[in-house]
Image (cartoon, rainbow, N blue to C red; front, top):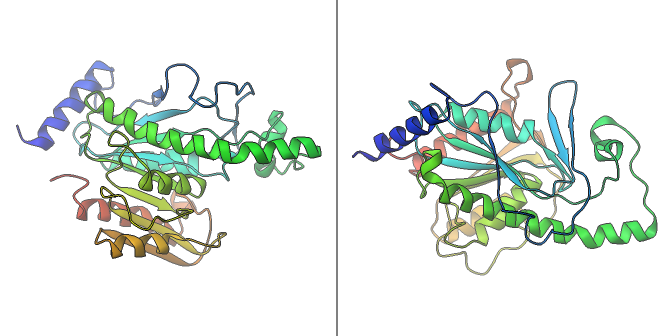
Amino acid sequence: MHMKRLFVLVALIATACAGQPGGPAATPASYRLYDGPAPGSEAWDWEEYSYTDPAGDSYFTNIKDPEIVAYLPAADRATGAAMIVCPGGGFTVNYYTKEGSNVAEWLSAHGVAAFVLKYRLVHFARNSEEAFYSITGAPEPVYTPEERAALEAHRPVARSLGNDDGRAAIAYVRSHAGEFGVDPDRIGIMGFSAGGFLTSDVALNHTPESRPNLVAPIYGAATVLPEALPSDAAPLFVAAPEIDLFNGLTGISMVQAWRAAGLPAEAHYFACENHGFGYYPEPERQRPSFVWIDLLYAFMQKTGFLGDN
């Protein structure tokens, strides 16, 4: 059977079984990445917090139970490709809407099954007010020297576990590819800021089960580049602002390494733009840099990630 038709048939069956004729669910389904407590954070006993601002954007903090939220395309649009979407937020907040669900909905509308990753975050908030001080304008939390030291010791551990969640998300979707109606050999990962660093780590460190087939760090980059890239490194797409926050390695550094290895890589840097532009679909919130999402789609087409549609 023609491969695209096979993926559409699988997606149609899954949609019918879920009672979602003609398109994705109104409330996307969530899937826990691990059975029981996530490995490495079994002792995390703090509360997770969520917040929705007046504009309707959602945020999460203190995440300890990682999961993916599925935005599946309508069966007649499904390409068989899938993308893990990793929001940013300084490793402490998950900017779920502007760097997660907005992107996932766009991808789904264009035939790509999208899964927003709520990965483990650095624990810093002792209550809901502290959790969203940077968003609401509340005073920044004040820590004792002992609390500050504990937080700094916790930070690299949490970041490493968040990277593990990126690998687990790919492995989860791959192992459930038939249920989601996706091709197990066309699963990518993309992320913004902190999520872009996570994406870059997965690009460079993975197993066959967690190997991405396309990687797209958006204003994020690897912290260290190896002397030689993995032999199975995936095509790389980079988008970033001219005015960014980071010293050291950038997306351009990654593209240079990919090109030196003879691997497909593409970069777009937007002039007069700042870190954190994300993506919004509403016309009144449009900005020129939002063209990055169309450029990403074109890159997916050029590299064969979307199949032979």
